[in-house]
Amino acid sequence: MNEEKPQPSPIAAENSERVRIPKDVAAEVDRLIREGLAISAIKQLRATGLGLASSKVYVDSRIERLARPKVSCPYCGKNLKSAKAKQCFECCMDWHDPKNICRLG
Ligand SMILES: [Zn+2]
Image 1: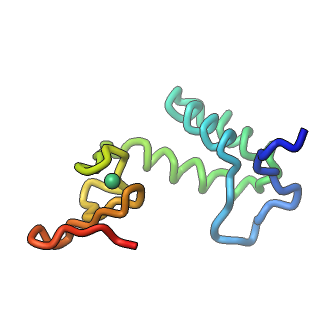
Image 2: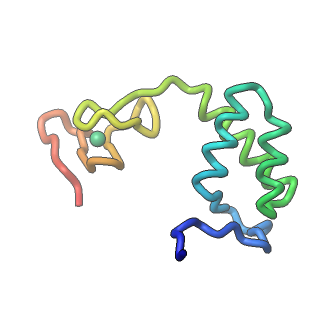
């Protein structure tokens, strides 16, 4: 009965810099972008109550993000934030200093 689904905010954070997109919506948006359906992706976001400008910015940032080559962590295999990443936010390994590879946190 009590499902733990992120509730899309009816009053979306139009003025806030960081917008929380529900995970299922984010996955659907990424799928649409991969298929070249950016307009549909924007519509999907608009349906959650997000403003048009914010939806466009989000889709643009995802298009850019999805176009980048994926680089995985040498320690856990999860995707790194960028090709130049020297630490992993999944397993907390840090290899900025190759002589002192450590686990943060
Ligand atoms: Zn890792």
